[in-house]
Amino acid sequence: MFIKRIFKSDTLRGVVKLFRARPKLLLCVAGLCLLSALALALWVREQARRSLAAERARSVGQEFVPFERRARVPLRRDEIKFWQNTEATRDLVRFQDSYFAATDGGLVQLTPEGNISRHYTVLDGLTESDLTALAVFDSKLFIGTRSEGLLSFDGEQFESYRWLDRKAQAVTALLADGGRLLVGTFAGGLIEFDGQRFTELRAGAERVRLRAVNCLTKDKARLYVGTFDDGLWLLEAGRWLHFQTSDGLASNRVVGIAANGGQLFVASDFGLSTVPSDGLQEAGTRSAQSFRTLATLPSLTSMIAYGDLLLLSRDDGELLALDREATGRQSAALKHINWPRPVDLSGSRLVSVDDGLWLMGSRGVWRARGEAPTRARAQLAWMPFGRAGESQPLTTNVINAIALDRGGNFWAGNFRR
Image 1 (cartoon, rainbow, N blue to C red):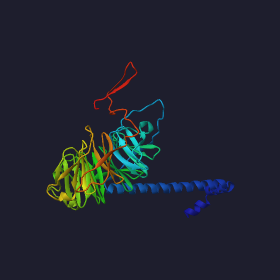
Image 2: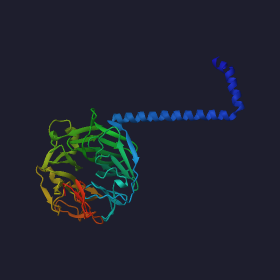
Image 3: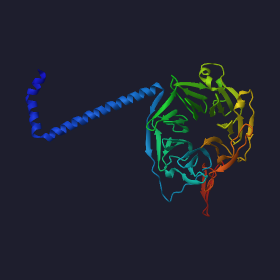
Image 4: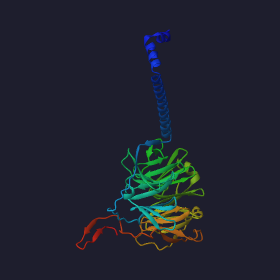
């Protein structure tokens, strides 16, 4: 009866007459109704998707991280010159047809032969020159900085990423892991980037923030997170385990992680420790020590599995080799790798790029040549890489004083070199 009254009302008759007189008006109203319904459906779907994604993130200890993304516009002005030293190298990767080195004086692009083809600075779009880490993800080069968050580079232009819910923006480690980029920070936690959004990975039911991340390693389904002062974290099948000196680590400052042959090796700034990797899940539930110390080595800065050996570096560039099969014995013998390292070398670090072995430090980059080391022959020939084609105008980027004398000479002073 109610419906019949509506159709018999004078108001409805007036509306019908109006639409008959103006058929275009009817089409407009129908179009608006259709667009409104479509917009409502899209809004409902987006809200459902966000709710589902948020629930999934919470279920694995993740939290969405709001961020700001900006295209960096180069500042190309002939009257502005930038003098920087690019020797101190922190990371090296292959991107497109070139090698790229992250230095404390900007981003350096090198040819396969080792010639410097370009030096990128803040004038080209970097947010700062003090770079810390590199990784190739989603067909882009991602760059970590000392205090200005994350950058991406597609070969032509830089983009910057800043996290809006945390003041700390120091990136300390990067790892491309399939469809995600893992970003280790000093005080902002371990962050995952899928190309569209950032989420923070937190550990355990307490949702602990992983601080001072120093190195990231993936071995099959296991993610290993080494920290500056909080030991080693392990994530497997949604379960986090935590290991420190109380579990047998030589130090809580982890500088290298290698998993091979059923053994996990952890290098810290005070030595090398190992544990059977298959028993880590059980070891993490016991109060007894699970790691065994292989060698006490102060000032270790990196470790890498290469061939039959574990190769380790100290801060001053001293290199040591350890036979991985010999680590099952109570005391494993370390072999020194002699090479003509600079007397003032510091911050040395071993990396593997293009299946080759590289050494970086405060005095540049070296590439291992010749045969890979073996148990019987733990020797390497190192060749300087990337110094041809560009002279170093400064000995350091830490400038403490500048002056212009009467003869028109410009002087720069520093405390270091």
